[in-house]
Length: 355
Image 1: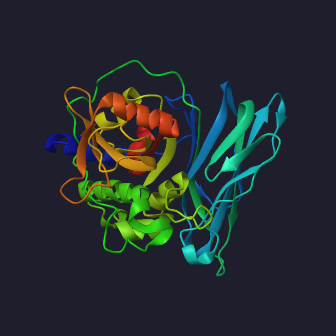
Image 2 (image 1 turned 30 degrees about the vertical axis):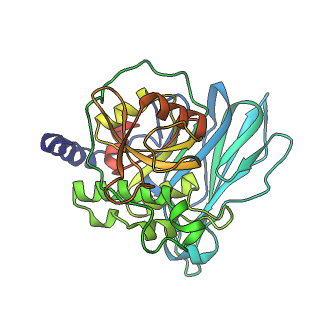
């Protein structure tokens, strides 16, 4: 982003900071994303209104923003409406910033006649057309209560948007960080080889911290790994946990499914780097620092003038993190890998304007 872009972004954020949100619910340009924001953070159990999904869905991911001081924690649950009846409430994650509290974890072995939860994703056996979320808030040992500021649900992707090329030639200067840091070889969840997600989050947090002069938004790679670790999944790649971790530092965000890179481009055009989840089979993507991967997160920072994808790939070593991947190859690895999953992380005021 050039200096003019930085000035305009800073001005927009200052203006937005003085605005109030009239409604907790926010309309989205993505019909498969529902976002609820709370002008005053919620401090007691929350049950959302029923969200209608007329086009139907078979998978869903819930994400949230919260502050969980003093060992407090929250339990986020989701249910779906199938053929006029409701499923059971599925546990989509128990979150606390304090890993030692024992309350940060996904919930395993959730399978019934309607579907199952795979760490952070609900998979239904039949198409649903409505959903509802609840968050149960639990005080810490000293009485401190969680503060819930945002809940989002993303479902199967909608029809691909028409090509827009609105960000071709844009390259956001996101700091380059590697997952192969000194602390990582024997780290949580497999260490450096498995720290792609918290490293990507660390890069984006560092970008916003430097751009807007908020050092408290930044976190190094080992801290991000510790802050996102899920002991049940035994890894740092739980999608909503990564977004929740950034929110504990004062940023905001959500997990979203996008149908194509044309849906990523408006974020890049607004100066918002996007973290994408990909899966690469041997020979599928040229120029990677790995031959294949069953699941990998990286930062999309821009596009070449020809529309190819500029990334910060945390699997690279220092000096070889910024890379360019062919648009068609990246799209295949992303859409066939995670179904278009991305993390959107940024300052609350800016994201309020975007969704």
